[in-house]
Amino acid sequence: MEVRVPSETVAKFVRMTVEGYEHWDSPAMFAVMKRDGDKVVPHALAGLAIQPEEYAMAMHATTQQAREECEPYALVLQFEMWKAPDKSVQPPSEHPGRTEMAVAVCMDIDGRLWFAEYVRDEPDKVEEQFYLPQDIPDNVNQARFVKALRDIIDSLRTGKR
Image 1 (cartoon, rainbow, N blue to C red):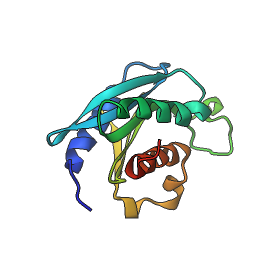
Image 2: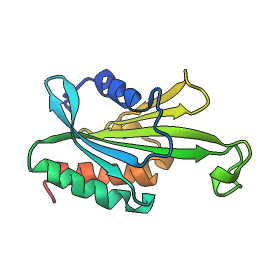
Image 3: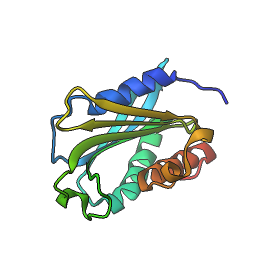
């Protein structure tokens, strides 16, 4: 598999998406990225002021519109979430030990996957993960937003609209 943009370049963009995040309580953001030499740059942005269950459909529509003007290279979804140390408390936003996070998830046309998480109360800490397609754990691969990104990437690779 030929990798066209260095992983570090994409990782830097994904990290910048959440690092120092200050727009708490804002809608999620979706970006269709295009290749510009050995860099990736945003081509189309969409604010997702909708329920998370509706993200996949909006992301697909935004990608299809962008596809008319460029060859999408990567997709980035940025959203906020609550994380609780005790998963039995639902929703996590009601747990007394909860943390609020800004998260960015990115998948490129080669199926590589990046995550960056920024915890609201820990301004100097961004957690990052990177997976090659064959190394994505099953629990990550089945996560709703990862699955949505992969479905869109698959449609780009096969030419389906």
